[in-house]
Amino acid sequence: MHSLNWTSRLISRALRSSLSTLIDTATGATPKNGQVRAPRPHFVSVVCGFAKDNLRHKYKPGKYGEDSWFKASTDQADVVGVADGVGGWRSYGIDPGEFSSFLMRTCERLVHCTHFNPQRPVNLLAYSYCELMEQKKPILGSSTACVLILNRDTSTVHTANIGDSGFIVVRQGEIVHKSEEQQHYFNTPFQLSLPPPGHGPNVLSDSPESADTMSFPVKDGDVILIATDGVFDNVPEALLLQVLREVEGERDPVKLQMTANTLALMARTLSLNSEFLSPFAISARRNNIQARGGKPDDITVVLATVAI
Image (cartoon, rainbow, N blue to C red; front, side, top):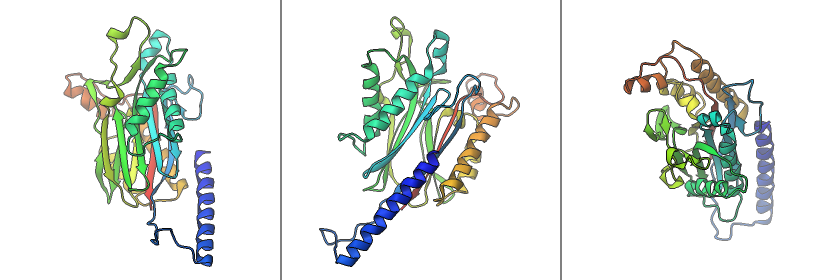
C-alpha cells in the first residue's frame, strides 16, 4: 500500500511538472532569475519488516513489533526514520513499541511544521522526545533511533543516529558512508528513555544531542539502507552489500520492494538459525561471551535510491 501511495504521488507530481513545463514553454516564461533550475533529487523508497513474535504483534501501519518507522516528503526534503523500542521494558508491564511509535509519528508530523530544518535531523529527535516527555499520560520506555534527511536544494543527506539502528550508503558497488553504532557496553546501546517513577537512577538515558550526526553529498543512483539492529545483528555487511549493489540506480518501486523484502526475509531467516555465526555472535565473542546463531528480533528495512 505504501508503494502504491508513493507511486500515485510520483505520477501526480510528474504530471504537474510536465504541465508546468508546457505552460512555461508556450508562454515563453522563464524563472525569475533567468536561470534554469537544476534537477532536484528525491528518494524512491520502500519498507518491509517482520515482528519478532508475529502471534503477539498484529500488523499496524508504521510498526513491526516494537520497531517503528516513518517516511515524509516536502518541497524541501525527503525524510525517513526508524526506531527500535527496548524490549526489556516488557517485563515491567510496559509496551516498548509505544515509545518508538510515538517518536516516529511525531517526527513525521514535525517534518511538515514551519520550523522544520532540513539540515538538522537531530532537531526532529529532540523535539519529538520533548513532546513525549510532556504527555499527560506518560509514555514510558526507551528507544534507539535513526533519522535521515535528504535536502533537495543541496543534494545533501543529513543524519542523526542514536544507538544501534543505522544506515549504509552504497555507490558504484562500494559502501561510501555508514553509521557507527553507539554502545555503552555490549548489547546496551545509547537510547532515549523515560523510566517509571523511582527507576531513573538505574536506567540508561541519553540525550538527543548525543546522537552521532553526519552530512554528505549524494549522487544519482545511490542506494541507502536504513534499518534497525534486527538487520545489522543478523546479516553480514558483505551480504548486505551484495544485495544492495543489485539496485543501484533503480527507480522502479516494485523492484525496490522486492529487494527490501529479500533483505528483511534474509534477516528473519538468519535470526532464527542457531548454527549461523551472526554479526551479533561475533561481537559477543569479542566481549568474551560464547555465542552462536542469530539474534531473534524485530526487523525493519527502509530501502531508498536517490533519483535526480
